Image 1 (cartoon, rainbow, N blue to C red):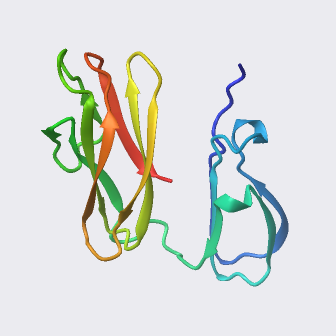
Image 2: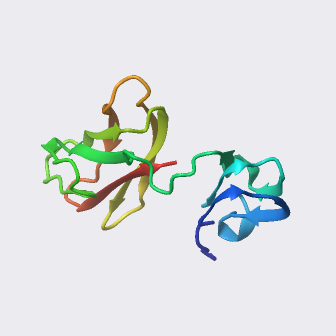
Length: 166
């Protein structure tokens, strides 16, 4: 089986962006939309943009001229497998002892997004396949906002827990 990388990301920021051509961020060699990247173009004057985006579902055009918005939005895992995790701790690791229930929750906190945030939670055990959970956090009304995701951990296997926006 041939495994290729993700499509990566392209972001253009300039007062004026014009031109034609294509921007291709398809992952996995351009097949099956596996690992597609993202394209974002931000400009004050966008009227001359004539690009084709591949895949077009992962492209957006707007006027956000800030490279790092203030405040910077963030996601945090704040609880996993019954253990509270301090904000800004990074990825979590869970090791459920033998006899534990594999059915657990992971709580994720979104701050300063100002909108519904599509996220992907990934459990990667040291042995066995990774598990993906795609959910949304509504950060448009409550800031910070949290969601609890029902997951299944392997028992007696160290599992890495990570989250990012989709």
